[in-house]
Each structure stands twice: as structure tokens, then as C-alpha cells.
Length: 92
Image (cartoon, rainbow, N blue to C red):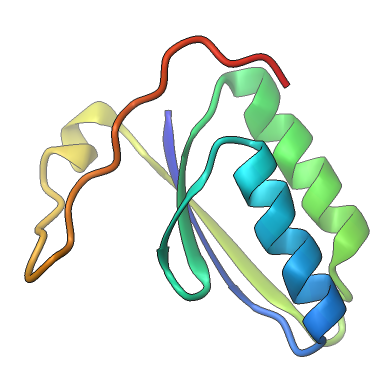
């Protein structure tokens, strides 16, 4: 499934950990604080768990949007924006 993750994290160290975690899960940065990731159902749950261990729930905001196949087809790209490539097999 395609997941869009956006975050607003006040502390640099936590923000860096989140960015690294998303990259570790195969995410591609599409904006400064926005990643797109193709995840299995198992990795979807693992990502939520690991994000929960990093953030400060009183200060930080993280949003995860799961896009179904039909929804992905409705994404509009303007300017240099382009869809990310769906990865091959990846084991985390």
C-alpha cells in the first residue's frame, strides 16, 4: 500500500530520527517533512509502533495517510512533482 507520512516535530533530534526511520522503511522524501512509502501490512504496523516510540505526543504531530489503488490514480502532480516508483522486494 502507498502511505503518505507528514510530520511537524519541534525538536531537531526527533525530526532527524523520524526522517531516518522513514528512509529505512523505503520512504522517499517528496517534501521537507513529507514522505511517501510503499509498505506491506506488517510494515505498516511496525512503522506506527516505531514512530510512537520516537515522537513526543505532547509536542509533535505525525499523520499517516493510506492511499488505496483507486486513490493513487487520483493524485494530481504539478510542476516537478512526480509519482515515486513502487519498489521491488524489500525486507526490513
